[in-house]
Picture 1 (cartoon, helix red, strand yellow):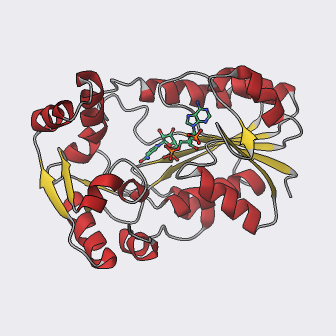
Picture 2 (spheres, helix red, strand yellow):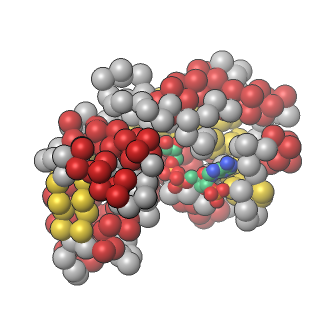
Length: 275
Ligand SMILES: NC(=O)c1ccc[n+]([C@@H]2O[C@H](COP(=O)([O-])OP(=O)(O)OC[C@H]3O[C@@H](n4cnc5c(N)ncnc54)[C@H](OP(=O)(O)O)[C@@H]3O)[C@@H](O)[C@H]2O)c1
């Protein structure tokens, strides 16, 4: 059993589930975020050492658009950490995947190289779109108002349940056999946004509507709500893989890491408490 595990991003969609699943299995966990149990700020290096001291394995959830993972894993190795599991993303090495206006993909490529070169045991998880974007993330507010307005056309994505992401991360942090593995993670089927909101409507017992917008309509709507044009374009870019279907393919990482299939979107929707 791994002694002490550091989970960064411990309040986020994947990290909080990793914390819970590790504790359910009896592991000692240091849950790190900018506030809470272990105060840790990627942008304040004075917080790094206390988070890493005495830790055997670490789950790294970086701040998108930064290149701080390299110095972090170097410090981790110096302090005796043995194992690192990185939250990366699908499509990061595909130049046609999406427009990278926020520098997110560039940052993740740098982070992957850093963990590969760290001398630590490493595992990289590359999830596609999280199903929880509908319940806790990017789309959650719109879903709760009953109308999701997006430039996603009739494109689909193979949404992955963050519970499955966390299960893979938990296995990689605590079990042998995952060293030097890159796990691309998806759900078991491509689901369109229209199908996703229909499934959510069924389980939330209320109607949620999808309104497709063109990218320029979407940007204009966000700007009219006070979002800067640059941020509005970055949001539109994030949705691009949904619209053009580049995230619809299936990946076998959940099956390979856990020896079971991933959960379906309907299973995710049924297990979620909808606001
Ligand atoms: N969501 C998706 O569909 C998706 C798909 C593929 C890949 N990814 C990648 O997966 C990773 C994790 O995403 P997620 O959705 O689990 O994250 P998330 O829910 O957005 O949570 C982000 C976490 O990072 C913490 N955080 C933010 N700023 C921080 C800082 N300066 N210092 C320390 N901690 C900070 C937050 O905690 P506090 O705010 O409490 O400090 C929170 O725990 C990201 O790199 C993302 O690019 C996401």
